[in-house]
Length: 393
Image (cartoon, rainbow, N blue to C red; front, side, top):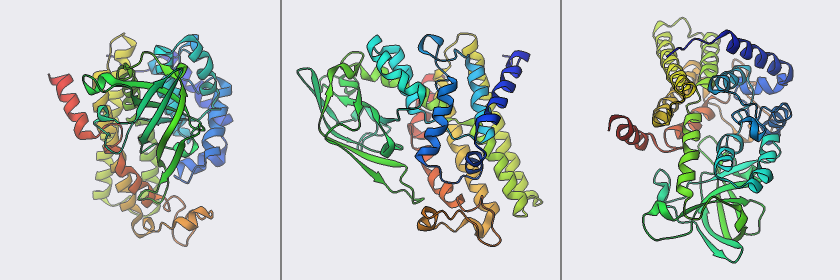
């Protein structure tokens, strides 16, 4: 396994860095570096910018309009965007559902849906979890009944990230109750503006409405929006989840947030505290170890091997690291990390109080928000069981 980047890969990194530097608005980078609130327009405008370059679908093969990059190039691209302070690419369209459409969709479905994803014009949401079906996703109850050339969908999804902005949703629905639970699930593409779709935001601990409940009341979905075969959706769902859990590791964001932690520690006067610097050093070691694991996966992909059996391990370590750096930021800022006044934030106040840094105001919000990371995408307890079975036997 060779973890050193080749001269060609270093040149590729430099090309991406230069392009991002000239196209990323400074005010947007300032928001990201200081964890200030990003609007739908912030995410969407950057997605369109990447789309015009042909880089929003950065993991896509050339035959579907992507750049055809290999695993290492995709990693370097993600790292340069994160370190520059670019808004995260919402993964639901380009990273998650697009590979499913490419692998299992019809040519007509590919021609219909992929261009809108690649351009950044269409915002996709994920319809997986339900109130009684989270990590145990196979127990989902949202039903889709075939009536002529349509499916009639009834049920509920929850924890739908950014669902309030969604144009379309990829949805796991139950089309049969016979046999094992996994065998009766189908994969539908659903227009969120269809009659009978209701989106209700869920206010989280941090005061934000990042996730939503989505209700379906006799929603009509054309049968030609079924991906693959009826009752075979579990196969497609697993294909997608492998992409999701690898993406959740988010090592590049962790590297950027490590630098933010160091800035806060210096500003707040705790950088010279040896015990606190020890904690930063321990975190940095864990981030480097996670990066080495990611690079190991990339090396396996380059050699044609399938590394997806450790996707759960990437998710476990990545989520724990996200929680740890948010805790250390809170400790570094001390009392200045406490204020979180939602109404004031809505009015534009972002922490410009005497004695506090602008980067401190969102710290409590970030800390509370990242409590979720060890639960979403399959809880870490479940992921440990999967890793134990697939890796240890």
